[in-house]
Amino acid sequence: MSDPFIGPDEAPASALEQLLISRRAFVAGTAASAFVLWTPQVKAAVELEGVQIEETITAYGKKLVLNGIGLRKRGYFKADVTALYLPERRTTAEAVMKLDGLRRIQLNILREFTSSTISRIFIADFKQVATDDEFKRLIDVIGQIGAAYANVKRVTKGDVVNLDWVPGRGWMATHNGKQLTGDQAEDPMAINNELAYQIYLRMYIGPHAPAELRNGLLGLTRMNRVGGGTVNPEP
Image 1: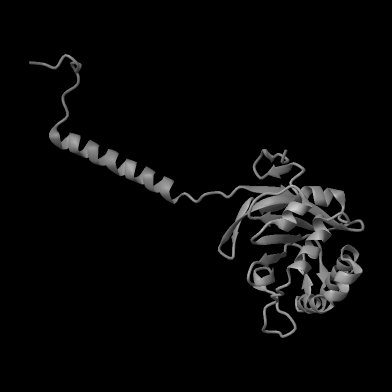
Image 2 (image 1 turned 135 degrees about the vertical axis):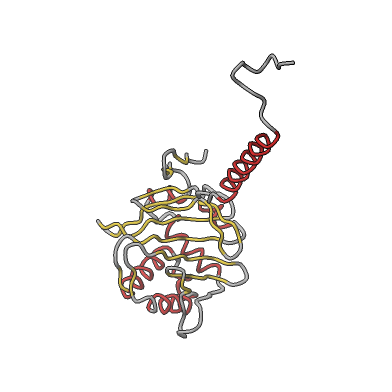
């Protein structure tokens, strides 16, 4: 008896044909699954001045989120694209200062600076935002940071400098992933003085910081995502 669902020019597939079809379907499905499994995930990033900044990072074993970005200038020159990473997003300088845990200021360099220029700029900015009493109390710390900057020699466009507050270890710094050293060439810069780091943060998000830079780092301005779209300001 013929099958009413098979046309006159069609014949039922043999058991061997059905087996081959099943095997091809299985292989195709397995390959598709493997492609999905091994396709690398594209990390979300924002962009400023052609510099791409990841929206989340892992540092010292801890996950941090991008709080904001801003362009830092020296006179008419663009110095770097600054990024602020925190355990949780905050929109005021006071909230950032009170936040427990790891914090990171990342400098994405846009022009060349020598170590002497870096040290001079740092000391001038630090003195501007610190009180006279704070500056006197931290004079030894400032000397340690100056020595670490002197060991850098120079930074150029495309370099990345991370300046981190790491609980239990102190103020840590890296240049293109290499740990900055202090007074002794082999010793990493680790200044266990949170006041010094908070004064450093004031340079970027305190009242003396340029409003455009401060608002950007506090997440109060829109960030453009790589590939389209935006990260809107916090309410």
